[in-house]
Amino acid sequence: MRPRFREYGLSFGRLEPGEKNLLSDVAGVRVGHVSIVMNEPTIVRTGVTVIVPSEKIFEEPVSAARAVLNGFGKSAGLMQIEELGQIETPIVLTNTLSVGHAFQGVVELAAKKKRFRTLNPIVGECNDGLLNDILYPAVKPSHVVEAYEKTCEVFELGSVGVGTGMVCFGFKGGIGSASRKLKDGHVLGALVLANFGNFEDLTILNRRACEHVKMGVVRKNEGSIVIVLATDVPLDSRQLKRVARHSFLALGMLGSPGYHGSGDVCIAFSTQKGYVSEDRELFDELFRAAVESVYEAVCDALFCAETVEGFQARAEAMPIEWLLDGGRSI
View 1 (cartoon, rainbow, N blue to C red):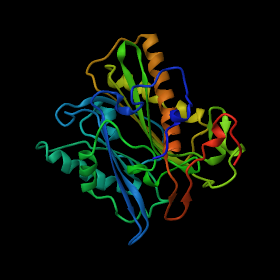
View 2 (cartoon, rainbow, N blue to C red):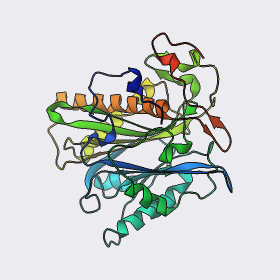
View 3 (cartoon, rainbow, N blue to C red):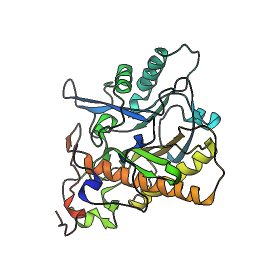
View 4 (cartoon, rainbow, N blue to C red):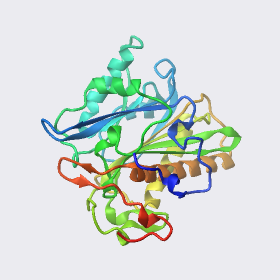
């Protein structure tokens, strides 16, 4: 894992980051990864990432919502989030053709906790078929259980877990995370699976990458992104959906107009029951926190990811020099 965005003295937005500047700044939230890297019998660069909303998620569902900017995706469980406004399992992220295996992994994990006749596993996905032989069934249900067992408050970013084979704006992408402090001691955090955007579009802190970086990129990559938002502000499903929709503004600020073949999904949840009155000041702050944390999380995915030689291509780690004071073109 390479240094994060803020470790270079860079920053974005008006709000202050949380203590760790991670999704897990929301108390009780944990994240775990399993990376799967093999060269035999084929080239595998994939993995699983598990987000646990709370210690008692299997017994006490949390309020949740989902928003979709462009629905070119194969996620599982989003329909019931829309219907019931809650999540009752950890959220699992994996590659597009492994959604079924991840779903089964959640079932097996839940069966260790309780008996049930129905369950709504939440599985998000992005397509890592450029760097990973996605037709090879590398992801197993057991990887979900393993990632769950590895969940913790401090976790890696970049080319790790489900991010192992992802490409973002033509550079190596993957997992990013950030958070923002809110009034009254509350916090909102974001985790992204960044696998979207074309190289020609990337703009960070008002600098266009293509004007400074001339080599080492995958030129076309429409891709997708999964955004997970968490907060300890007590919001109901309708209120969470309002916040989730605003997260997509960050993608445009980074230069992406969205594409026909992209799956852009946000899953948002609150760790606290109830709802708050829709005070303008609070919701303006929530909207800003969603945009700022997603923007910085995507930056962290790019900054932290390391070069990966993959199935059909080599995805280079994004150079950093062009963004620093006095940066040079490379």
